[in-house]
View 1 (cartoon, rainbow, N blue to C red):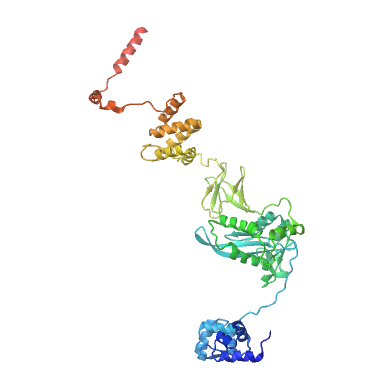
View 2: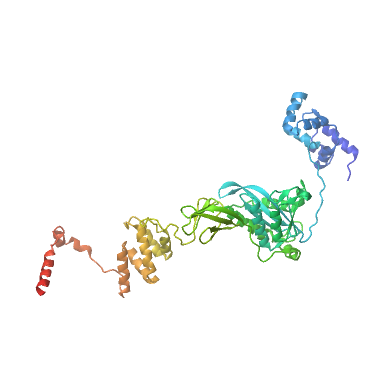
Length: 503
């Protein structure tokens, strides 16, 4: 409903007299929103300053162009050259009210959601707290335009190789690809030109051909051509990131995968109430089905095997068998590496966590240094872990051994020998042996072995033979405790003499 011209003039007159917008709304029985609309769109030649002083609109427009659009400099020029003192907030409000420096909202072309025709890709940066510290990460997203399903992953840095790994991971998970992929004019895929004139790198063209799609770059400044993925990032900011904690990059990506492929894909959309996962099932017949196997993206590296038998890659070290210290070729994949030495057998290693640095990796059970000293001290951590796992009684006995009460001199050796005994005993015999050793505070391997032998001898009693320590208080014991021991060599000589006589 149009507002009468007389009413508009009344609003402007009251506003010029210094009345507030809410006060004008009460006086004229109008809504504050209507009053603001009349004042904001009025084609006036001047604007009233809050203190009653006026600033000419043409002067503001001229100063805006003269100062390059910087309002702080405009504030200084108004005071120095025109004698007008104005607050910065008031000046910026006047610029907004008169539309000076404001971009007008333009209509945009609408692209219909054609089933199976298009997917969109883009990246954006975030600053997240991961593992207790703030880190900058790059979020890569792929979005099916029709079904609205999406796939997101986070990286500490993004390059062409990681872009290819991301596409391989997302498309092989779906098993399908759209005929076209809309991207911005990134140099990761575009060789030169923009928009329709963009020419893509042969490497990326070949890569896309494996999956059956082609690249399309939107026109420069026309980012809303891929509004779907832009909206997907907005959903990441408002629905995925808030209220979540991340221990590592691996934890972040695991949660992102679950959120995008399970939680978001299976909930109804806000406006249409359609479910992306259901729409994707309908879209599959119109998409490009991927071959059963596609070679994952990889890139080669040249390295050398050092004097210790390790190959350095990505800040970590990977052991290689043999005695050669020559060159080696490392093939890097998205989740693993393969090392091909100039001589010997190639090995494959999974990539460690992204934060791993200066770590050494070797095949399980391989002795990477056969020349280490034989008397090198070795701990008994693994043996102790297995002993404790055998039962609560054994765990209590290990606590006794580790305490100062046991007085075991070589604790690591004792635990390893104890583990050897456990492996050679039946569980029932082992538990009975440890129970008795703990009861009498036995901390000698030979004594524990004798206890097990006694238990296997078939004795009914589960107690050790009772020994009365009272003999130490007897008078005969006290008199003889300091006497000299008898010399038994004489009896040995007699026995030798008897043998010679017999001979």
